[in-house]
Image (tube, rainbow, N blue to C red; front, side, top):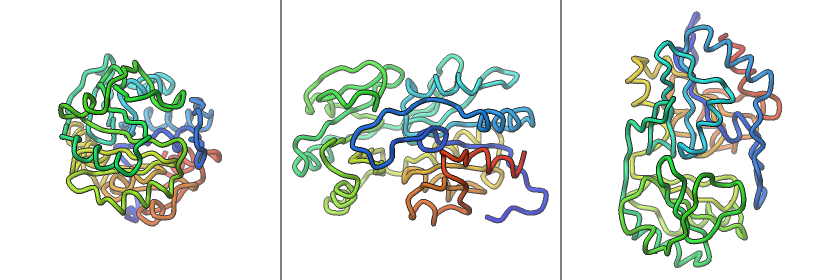
Length: 278
């Protein structure tokens, strides 16, 4: 969308990894340094001071988000309740304290078994909301957070879940792009990360669906939403929002889905975009 003269967002939705923080793109394993750049903090402060909602919309679980909200000193609304989209839209919650508002689950058993036929040594994780993850083996340090409980794959998918992560530290991002195309993930929504990382969500669930719920709760029209992100899991959100902006290092398909492209995360792309409006 090209905003009309005088347009200003009433809700700013921000991805986290690769948008607020550098995210080790293309590396087999990586640790994200959770540091808010001064320019970014100043920009978010201006948004909040203008009375505009700031909503984090991320693939992270609730456990991995609250610390980021604290770094940004969010929420600062009169009622002290900030709304957040977690787990690629499968969970929304308010903070502080964490109060889960919505969850969407699905039966992942068949899809997980099918994928493991192609990547039998893959790591598998399912989310335990507000706690951490149940995993078949431990993930590389720092990639997922919270408590980790070891279980067999059969136990992991024995009941409906909000999301499943399939991870192979020995494969590449392109390997997983080809895998997803080969198997055809029917009945789900899926997102491929910057490494060999496949995030599987219930069909129809994305950051866009979660953000739509949050915007409705806040009384904000989609036309008045500014969304900024860098990953394939941001595409639906960027196309849904009144103005969707891709980070400068985003893959080409993400940039093409957006209304505009800002600077890279290392060049404070979020701050550059927010300075246009605040």
